[in-house]
Length: 197
Image 1: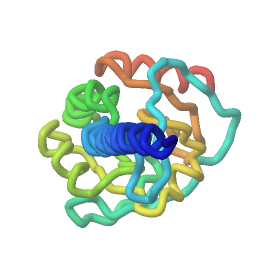
Image 2: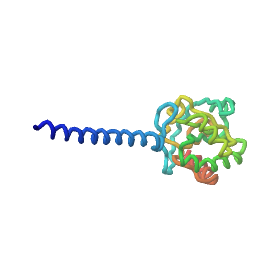
Image 3: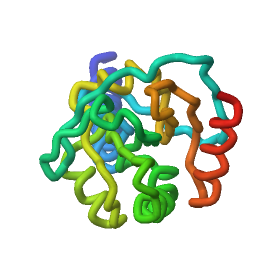
Image 4: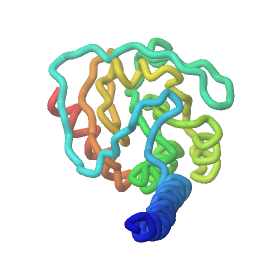
């Protein structure tokens, strides 16, 4: 006698639970497919976006040496730039502040004197995304990838964008954390760091 009510309840509960489980799995699948992509690199390491703005100085520290091959195949090293002021900007195509900063750096790159060089180093990124970013932003200055992340590690890059200023003798003057907002600001930061050095 008791079998009929138990069987009836089971027949109503099991399909209901099954529908809830299927709905939860579909919701999880939908979130996985359509959620914003996390900002990760080809290396599998997460990248942090620098939103703020601050200047950090270094006391007589030598700039870490680096060598890159630019996206157009030209080898560039810090050693070959000795005798020039070098501005090194770490960026990534997925970084919104880097997108805002890109036209500023493109303008700076077109106006530098012969004694100053701007080098962009792409980190935590996909090559195809980086080259599209450069083409879109008319970045006519030297740019190449940090393929294994070692340059960013050597410089202590915590996030992007970060811009380092190096004196002609290879000494780190300092760095600017966050997006640069105008060519005048780049010149102002450089002069301030040179004055502190």
